[in-house]
Length: 306
Image (cartoon, rainbow, N blue to C red; front, side, top):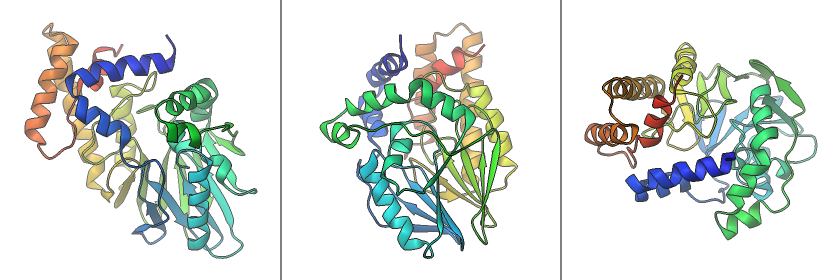
């Protein structure tokens, strides 16, 4: 069974428990990105959409984090970045992970854009990138048009665990801390703003999801231990609203609590499906304002841990 088939099976099983919330979570806003921005910190702006796009502006260079779905969205982001940046400055681009809404817009950026990516993410891109593009293109006619003819781009710069970009008055630290939502999740920490661009690793009132053959709950917690040490003041997730540094500890507590509950139920001999229902109900009681509290997929990941 390939990655797309495994994901389809997971979504079908989860949808049986919560069809409305799963569809809402999968969509997470319009496919086309706007040209409006929100200022997150002194050097960081956000284009709100699916996904949220970060633009980090220094006096000598600008960094864009994520590309939107397809080259049309990439071109939109590049126009916005050019308006925010000083004239004749370098443009860097990086991606939080290999999924098409985060990486398939790279061809829309202008020539000379310098693309950076961590090694593990690039390995996932080479293994599953085209498969994911095909899957996303099959979701709607709009997606098919946006992804038509998209060729995966290789990065100009690959890094193992950290790359530092001096943008002029601001430093962007590109970080690979380990496996979480995917194997190659990349975080960006902007100094001196203390702004974390967190991808799917830290979200706001959003259920964590380990995608396909990504990380495990245990490795995600290990990543978050390193993220906590950054002491972020601002957090900009890719599929939920930005917030302050408390989002990091809230994410860790959520994942730790779900994992502890799931392991206890597994030890008692409770089936994964029943454990998922029970933990989902607990979360709905605890977080009644969340759009989705379906823990089934994450509980399955806990049960599958070695």
